[in-house]
Length: 228
Image (cartoon, rainbow, N blue to C red; front, side, top):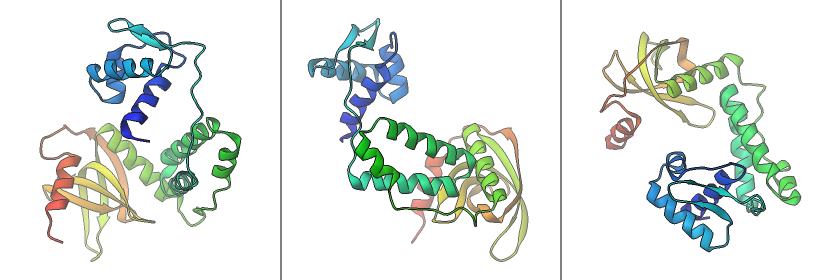
């Protein structure tokens, strides 16, 4: 499905079961302009989707409307199952709950045969070897990133050097059975990666400001600029 086709489907889904939704609301939810919403709604109407309403007032999907069930290829279903199961094991309680919920919603909107294929996908990620304290750290860091909170922790690097750090967490990076956190480090006054397993006594503090030059996009540019 192309990106635009996916967006058109999202618009129809967002309008389902609501009284009236304005173009401005749709634009904010989908991160597009109201003008793009007007064009997409018009195209959906021309293609036969029974959208009621008009610009300046709002839109809704006619109650008699029915959208086709979600369809996926076998490869897409396998990827969904594998990704969700890995997150359930390695992603902490928050990611695990989100992965299970997303799969359940997808499964409920699929034909029975596809649902069975999803449930039978032969990909597994055993969790018996993952320590509970590790999952708790991932949850704490996830929460810190979402809420822009400073994080403090004790850190022991690969050379066994111990330091106390305060960082501005920007993103979590999964390397296959290992997480690192991308952050702006107050001690080093620069971007750093920290191995989550080497972080101890993780604690959340005050919110940090959205500062030019210290955002995730800046971190990514910093990484890409490094010589390989």
